[in-house]
Length: 203
Image (cartoon, rainbow, N blue to C red; front, side, top):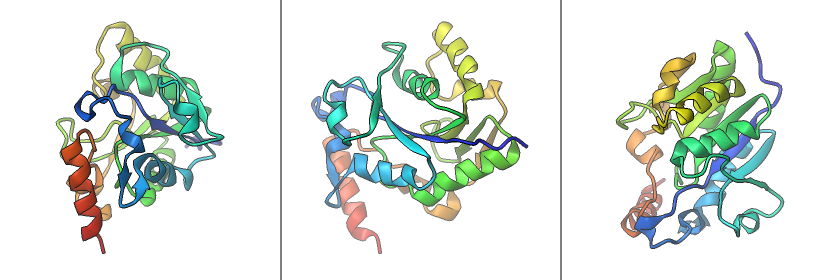
């Protein structure tokens, strides 16, 4: 079993937010707290450092003191963001999309623990997505980088298809709640309104 000596938490802040009128959606508030701050809190407990993967010129202002890295492969979507995270990490990386306000810190910790314990290259949580898991809420060892680059080179930009080519494990997310709520994404104004409703329902 290989234990990662270092783990980087990466906030994936890509996308043009076309469904949000071009507004940086992660800076919107859910329950009075910016989504990006919720995501940072979910990562910090399990990581040795935090980075923001973003191409926005103002990204350095989002979380002062946090290193910002840009995509190395332009126009590659979510997979390009993951590639940038892996390229700027040491040992392993925990990634979380910046439009995911409800992912608990305990789940991120469990993903890191499960991946390290299994000696895996990747650990992803189960969900109701078309993949059956969440590729942008996951733990990856930097051994995944060459596989991601191979898929980028072949123009296979699906965020999850490359995982078939590495040793990956799936972690049952049900102990942390309903998957539809845990992995709820804020992509549009209606989603933001729903997120605030879900926050008010929380105990």
